Length: 117
Length: 255
Image 1 (tube, rainbow over the protein chains, first blue to last red):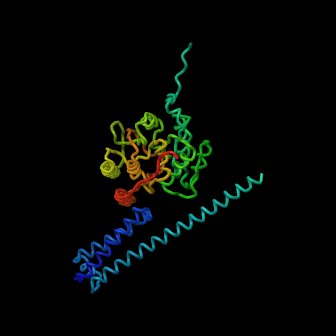
Image 2: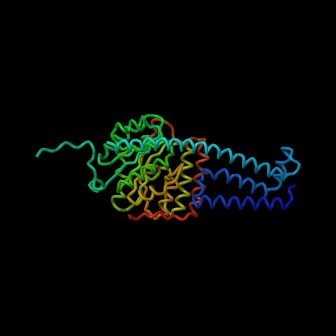
Image 3: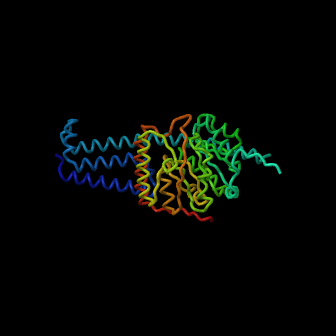
């Protein structure tokens, strides 16, 4: 069984994470579509820290002797997923950025040649 | 005097003819339908300026629209329906239009029904009018899942805005200058219609629903596939929930 204090600490951390994410969305510094993975992370950590039996069962299932480690393994899996997701987002953004720069160059050229007439 | 032949189309209502009016047609890969949509809008009222927002189509949508002689805004890449529609509203705002209707480029909206959409705006009874498939007199055929989803959001949104709303996913709508100003400044992303309804209510704009019949899509597929439905539901629910705690302050008076 997870030590009680570990559960409390994990639950508090999860709640803080959730509140920060919700505030970021509210103040429009984070779009909903990018927040979903974070929210899922927070909710899963919260559930596992509150429902201590489930964490023990999960740890046992994959052969982790010390249940709190399972919590951290899970958390790092989520963080990796979020990072991978961001890599795809950044790739898309840099593609779009290139397209915008190219369009802008064409427009400026067209404007300049028109001024010369 | 001999009687003149009946014009093929009902002549435009004088009240409508007085307004500077624009039809915003978002289109993403709709090369087969966009021309007909343009022709039907012209058949309803040639006085509508039509702006097609080509949302980064990879087919000939933009080319076909330009050949029809309408205004075409080509987005350099796909922004999604929210971004595309907002581009149209920004164009409407910048060019001083007083009334805008939104008609999908896929042909599911019947431009003849614009008459019903603009009615409450011309009467001064609404700032936004939404064509709904569920209000009395409308007809809707769709998958059961889709209907359940639409009804769920309709119930939630009705509670949030304190007014009965039957169809929050309809993209067939008309707005006055205030609505144009709001949507040009602030319009939701991915699946915008549900959130836009709340947005309008939060800015104390008056919204009215009118029944319309929507056609079955002729080509292409709905942008909401079964796989995306879950994402759609969760994302919109989250946005609605957050919206409850947001302060809305887009200025809507003319500067």
